[in-house]
Structures are given as structure tokens and as C-alpha cells.
Length: 189
Image 1: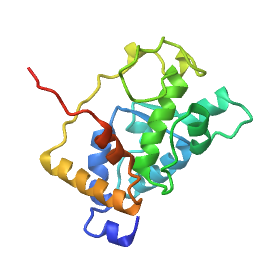
Image 2 (image 1 turned 180 degrees about the vertical axis):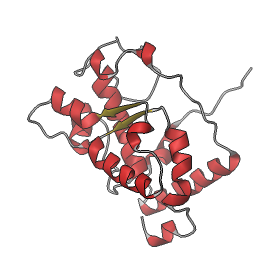
Image 3 (image 1 turned 30 degrees about the vertical axis):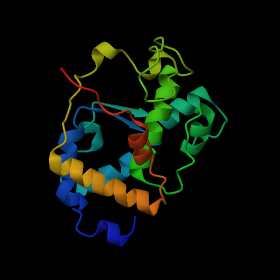
Image 4 (image 1 turned 45 degrees about the horizontal axis):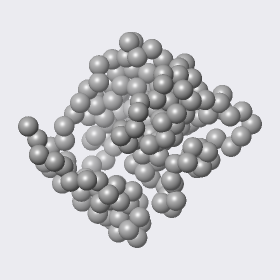
């Protein structure tokens, strides 16, 4: 990101409490969790907010899962994308949103044998994949899923961000490609 990208955007201190509320009691899936959690804990501490361990409901470190499943091999995000056939050719820029999308694809492949977010195939058998059922625990113990619907302003801001990302990546924005490939929504009712 450039300074131009950040002009007019809220500072972390202005958004941190809202993030804590949003992420409270959720399962956090992070690759190399101690690295990111350390930064968040430091910033939360500066703002008198609770530590991450008091916010998340569960923390899953995909690097730990990968090291258990593939000991002695490279287990960074790029290596895992290659291992599970997740297309990461468009990852020329290091960004949180792109990395989160790639990690979501990798996590599905690691824990359930599913290799895409597409839901048009038969559901995987529980426990399939190299990590087995221990990687995702007992679904009966999870908190109910919170569904947050974006406002029109949030959708517009997201579209604006994707447009800028698409320009900077010279037309290689994954979300733009997925939007173009998605079938038009059918009638409801």
C-alpha cells in the first residue's frame, strides 16, 4: 500500500475497539499466529484493550497444522498454496486481504480435503485430509455463527478498494476475476 492509499483512512486506534467487538468469541485462523498476535497484543495494550487471548473464542495456527502434517517441508503460505493446488500466481503484492483469501483456501484443503470455496461438489467426509478431525475440533462445541450484513456504504467502499487493488495489480485482482466469472443471480422467491 502507498501513502496515497492510506490518506483519509481511519487509524488503527480509531477502529480497534470495533475490531475487538467484531472478532470477539470467533475462531481466528492465522498462519504463524504468534507473529500476528504479538503485534495485535502490543497495539491493543497501547489502547487499553484486552489481549487477543481474551477476545478470540479459539485460535487455529495453520503453520502448526502444516508442520504436523508435513514435518521437515517448507510450510509458508506460498509452499502450502503449491502443495494444495491453490492458485497464488496473482500474489505479487503482499496484502492482508489477499493472504486471508489464500489462507482460507489452504485451510479448507488442510482440514477437510476441500480445495476451493466453491460449494457445488459433494461435501467432504468428516476427518478427510492430512490433518484429520482433530484440526477442527468438535463442531458441537463451537459458538453460533454471527452473520453481519454489510451496509450500502461498506459495499461501496469495498468496491472502491477492489477497483484500486485491480489497478495496482494490473488487472490481477482475484475478487474482480471471481465476480466476472460468477453466474448472475437468479430470481428469488
